[in-house]
Image (cartoon, rainbow, N blue to C red; front, side, top):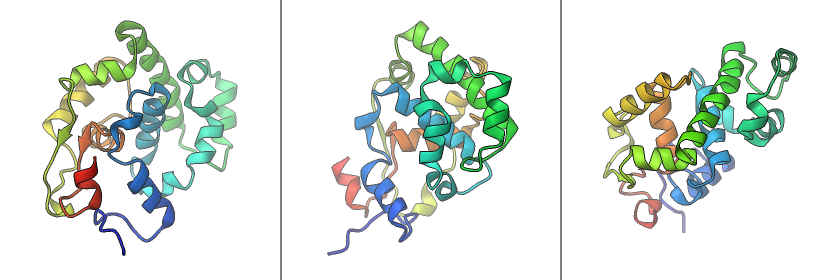
Length: 189
């Protein structure tokens, strides 16, 4: 029997796998490398479709040293130039430089708070936000929580972290459960 999924999921197997195994799943939330990866990929998506990024994800992992923030923070101008020649990723200079800059800001938060996930968990009061949307059209692009997170991250030196990107990030890593009520994962997550 076919599982009922959120409306945004297409028939693309990559999308289905992402939805079923990852999106909104808080189980990987304690992994700072994962959080840095998702923050980077959400920023890379700005102006593009998520499937465009998802199809390049493995290339991004290889290009950005498996999203190790310590390695990314140490990238030189020469490394950035090499990334701009990498056809497997989105070759946008501002987005690439933002990733390097964000790695530095990410490390600062880790040093201050012990981990990025601890910082986020405290920021959101230690609990997942679970919404009860009936239709995909009800799901907002941004919320007051994502606006607050965006403002805080920008104060800490991050870029490509506007309210919409922050909300997508929050959904992806499970800070927000936005599976619609008819989705089989609504009750499981």
